Structure formats: C-alpha cells, structure tokens
Image (cartoon, rainbow, N blue to C red):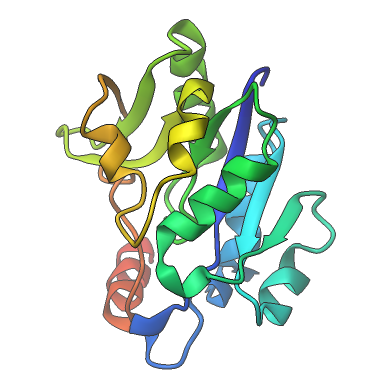
Length: 195
C-alpha cells in the first residue's frame, strides 16, 4: 500500500480489565495484539506498534512479525501519546491509519477497504463506520495532518483534528467498526456471540 503506514496504539494500561491484559487475551488461540498486528502486516503496509514502558509480554507476542515497535514513556497520558509517537516515526509522506488493537472483528480486508478508499482521496480523513452508519475505527489521517498530530494531548485521540476536517465515511459489515473489547464483560459477550 503506497503512501500509507498503519499505527497500532498498544501502549494503554488495560485498566478496565481487572488485572488482565486485554491485548494478551486469546482469540482462536492467538493473543489479540499478535492477531491484529498480523492482519495489519498482511496488507503490505509498514506497521508501527506503540508499547508502554513495561511491555515485556506485549512485545514478546509480536517480536517475530517485522513491525516497528516504539516505547511510549508518557503512555499514561492517554491515546495522544501513542499518536504523537507514531507520527514521529512514520514516513512523513505517508498517511497514518490508526488501527486500535482491541477490535477483534477488524479484518485484513477491512483495512484494505479503507486503504483503497483513501487512495482515491489521499488529502481527506477516512473513517470506518458500521453498516448502520455509526462512526468507529480504523481512521486514516492524511500526511498533511502530521504537524497537527504533534499537538495532540490527553485521551481524546485524534478527535480535536477530526472536528475541523471533512471526513469520508467507509462502511464495514455489521458492527465491526465499533466492537472493542475493554472489559471482562465485553470479552464474555463477544466470545458467547462467536460460538
């Protein structure tokens, strides 16, 4: 995928999981973080993964994949710290797709669908939505927004940028664009549905 890098922000503390690490939960026998990084890598785009300072197990499950891993010392600040770190490392001419790692229903084909949409309008933000139109992830931020990403703060992610941008919405099947697993209850419901 020419002109696109994929950022997997995996520096969060998984604080709502009651001591478990949501990114190490197994899906079909594979840790979720590994599964999603592999799906990103299978597109052929460069993949950047942000990690918290104490990241031993997370880095271990993706060590052989061939992605760029970045430690984020200020990860406790929230999503903005990962976005800033990813923006610094990515090719400056590339758009940056933000692919949240706790969304197990996002597939390689979904990532490609967004990338193809972006290729037709590379100066515009693209955002995945559900079949019913609910905004979700992944989101592609064009390269021209890289300087603005350096000013992001807190846990709002890229919202401050998106508010002032035209956003092209890209529908994905079902609710996969909004299915994220942050709590033990969300994991239990998702696993029950997958049976």
